Image 1 (tube, rainbow, N blue to C red):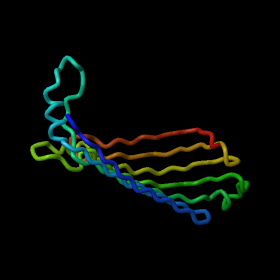
Image 2: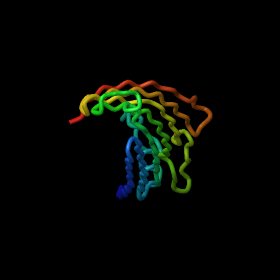
Image 3: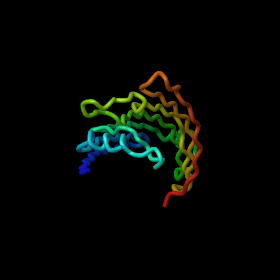
Image 4: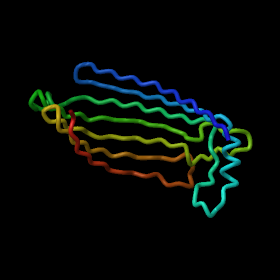
Length: 153
């Protein structure tokens, strides 16, 4: 079945001295989503493929802010210690075709707090905690702790 796809993204970043912020907005559209949903429904169980409905539109938004406190704590000028907060909301079933169930389980909100340490502008360590809530009360919220090490080049 023909199913054209349109994706649009808006990205913004700002940095002022020690402060920085970023935002991301994403929107997607799937043509003939009702036909794709019907085809999925008719798939054989023997295939092991998901038979889930698909949305006509999806959306997402993320906003993050951080501040480098390394200088205030006496770190070397080539090092950064940046606490940050991030809020994300996305819904992969933002709009559905008539007759397709808009499942609230695909609506999500994530709240993250953390800190990133960058040494000599090349070696990065990040620790954060994120709390995810779903649009459906049948699904319990999740809290995760993430630790990452990376190299910036």
